[in-house]
Length: 600
Image 1 (cartoon, rainbow, N blue to C red):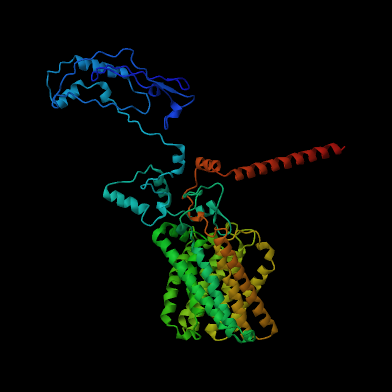
Image 2 (image 1 turned 135 degrees about the horizontal axis):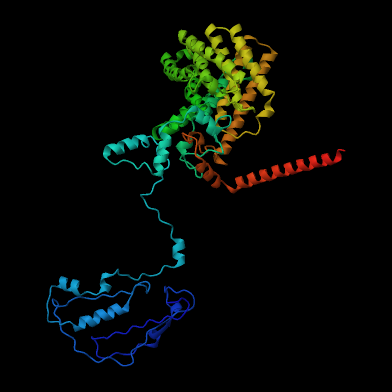
């Protein structure tokens, strides 16, 4: 059968049931195929011709069969295509069936099995109506209900290693050669500290290097809980510290002439309390459903310090509470909040001293100040509540480790590769510890003595050294971690108000108002930027690639596949850079040749 030519279907069969045959109408003898709705035709118009026989067949006696003696019943269904339909088999089967004697009686099942033609044993094709293209376009593609994306399962709490152990106990081991098992092997163990430094870059180690391949898919958006980082608690730090600042502006004698209402501090406190509840609930859900991601964040050299942020924020909330006298707060609240900080310090500070992969000379970065500030904030709150020994203990621990961290960061050891060459908002954390330490020591001693002034002057100098280089803080990608860098500015403002209470003059008052205004404007601007990224750009929570690095360095084949799957814009950028480098080299060559000719 050739497409585009006339196709004729000739059917010649002896009919034993009728004695005469009437000729078919011309409409059924020759019909254009395109006039038949739903007929599958390709190319030119196809004509179906069914010629009638020249002479009718003579009538033959029809054998009479009882219902029990009918050997078989033949049901013929036209296939969707003429392939596999052999009419010769039907002719052979009919001629053989006529020659057989009808007197022999056999069981119906055996007779059908013994004498059925080959056509009945073949697969039967039942013709179906052809669907139009409009119906196919309007019909949405169906997806099987059983299909589920399992690429994120290794980061779930009840998947990964626990799932494989339960499967082995049930007697259904997981295939170790499947792609999902490869991801599970990568997530069984947390990458080492060197692996984080090798695979990530940036001041916060949150950008994947171009030669690395992520464990999770990078071409689509991950689940929200996987994209929600621990650094989101920085928002609570920024807002709750503002509540303390406005409370100090409303109650401190040096700023009494401003007539600031306590209502502003109360509103900020309630907002920070609601924000703390929201962020805590979301991160608790992450702990419940994606514990592997939380574990990787805890071993991250930068993110590990942000695990102090929730407890520091709680200490800020207690200090900024709408209660005039902090002595009314039960002492058990202080012990309850300082216990997690003490446990984290035993873990983090012990790693600094152990000399292993997480020794301080290797992981030192400005975000380590978050682990120091908790001691001074706890000492300040305990002293306000009337405690004595506990605040002095945490003040001593914080002071010892702050001196070590301060010297380590100032030395910039050759082995320390975490500090970038450019300035970054993370450097404002240098101001946080001495600012809060000055207020804590003043509250423990009962007055702003020389020890408190030394700590305050150190903080003031570091603040000014960063403020005069404000142009160096441009060109950085926005991150939620910036919120954690706002409370040092607020802490410096509160320390200045405390100092102005002891030394009251025009300079200290002006400095108090100026630093408070800068901190408030910074927090307001950061709030607007956060809302813009959240509701306009919708990129506030991008894929957190810092937790999706491989445990080992990827092979060259994976790196090559990663480059092949990169976007065309990146390829154009590489080509443009290569062309520009070639042009520069050509121009350099021409210049050297010209100089060579000019010389005698």
